[in-house]
Amino acid sequence: MIMKWLHKFSSPPYFYALSGKLIKWLSVLLVAFLAAGLYGGLVLAPADYQQGDSFRIIYVHVPAAWMSLFIYMVMAVSGTIALVWRIKLAEIVSVCSPPIGAGFTFLALVTGSIWGKPMWGTWWVWDARLTSELILLFLYLGLIGLYTAIEDKRTASRSVAILALVGVVNIPIIHYSVEWWNTLHQGPTVTKFDKPSIHIDMLIPLLNMAIAFKLYFAIALLMRSRNELLQREQNGRWVEEVLEGK
Amino acid sequence: MSQFLEMGGYAFYVWSAYGVSTLVLCYGLLRPYLDHKKTLREISLKRRQHKRDLND
Image 1 (spheres, helix red, strand yellow):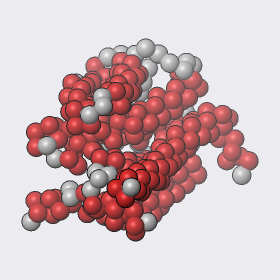
Image 2 (tube, chains in turn orange, cyan):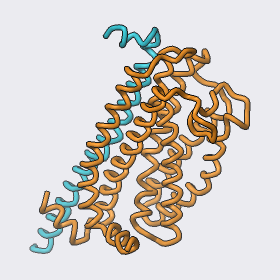
Image 3 (spheres, each protein chain N blue to C red):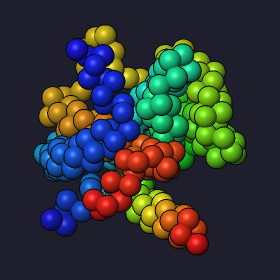
Image 4 (cartoon, chains in turn purple, red):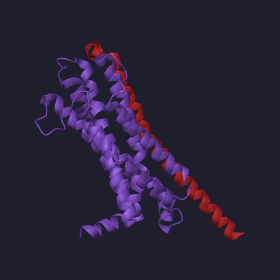
């Protein structure tokens, strides 16, 4: 049943039509979660007793940093599926993810830097967390460059998947860097086995923003995948129908 | 309202962080939106040319 559905979903014309509808519905949800998250984070949440209002940067910084890792895993998993089972759609997902991941990694670094200046007194330190996140940005940029540099799209996708797999080693390093090494960066407040050490009024907007960013990723990924699919399948008959229905 | 905008003296940091995020995230959706239009245009142009070549 599930396999049958998956098979149908991965057929290009079906995916193209369904993703068009999905993008609309997910956008409505995105606006709702974004509004709730921003209102909760910028207005309702009380100022932090140590950091004052500067802590509100957390609502873009932390979800962006989570996304930078999450997207990498999505890319590595779909890349593996593409390598092993040669599923076209998995291939497209893995090559459409890097630009979105690079955007979130860039944001995590920039907003972190802007937060670091008033709190640590410096824009940047070469510590483990910041350096490994910067390496992640370079990995993403490398993957984008690799994909555009190779003419044949199937070969390019396979190279991207392999390089992505090699880079997976960086992911646990980023996550545990604040525990393994001494650093200016604060430890985790939410993603740990203990109870989160953050007040509920501060936590709820953070979770709303995290969901909003996930939705954003889904939308951006679907949009990019549709374009990639159109380009790869431009001689298919279903594209004719898309052009007529436009 | 002005108190809200001041962000307890951290206005510059808070609003520049949110400003950069808005720019990057908007670009991330605008780009594929424009690419989609361009791809459709290019494909339909190519197909029309192909048909014309067949008729000649």
